[in-house]
Image (cartoon, rainbow, N blue to C red; front, side):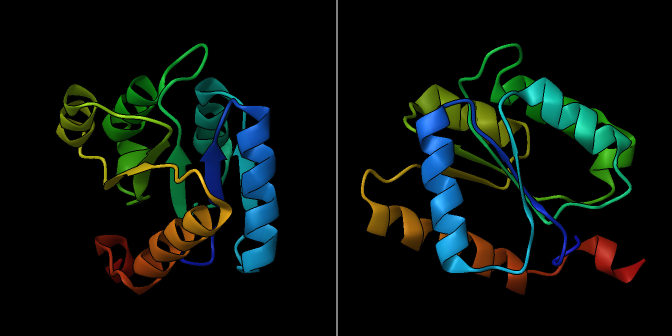
Length: 141
């Protein structure tokens, strides 16, 4: 895990993306925030870049490939899997099946987007600060 690497945000809703852009600017993390409108664009970036991302925040309901399909492609790609990039779902709603499906794909977190800016800010801070403190096997290579 590269704690100084970019945070990858995969979000197809323009309004949600604008809110997240504003929020990450306010929080002032040193990590670059890289946004993608769909999973295929994110997967192409992850496969081509030499930069190791810090973490991935992915919506579930997206065009082309959904968050579950994207997670499966990342999880089963040996080069991406060994990078130990935390993959978290960050979505507007969930049901029991979605949560079970997510964890069966070894997702590292499942979060519902809070409806208030303060709630959203608190959730993003908890996520980023947790992963800044976490140690991954890739740190020992």
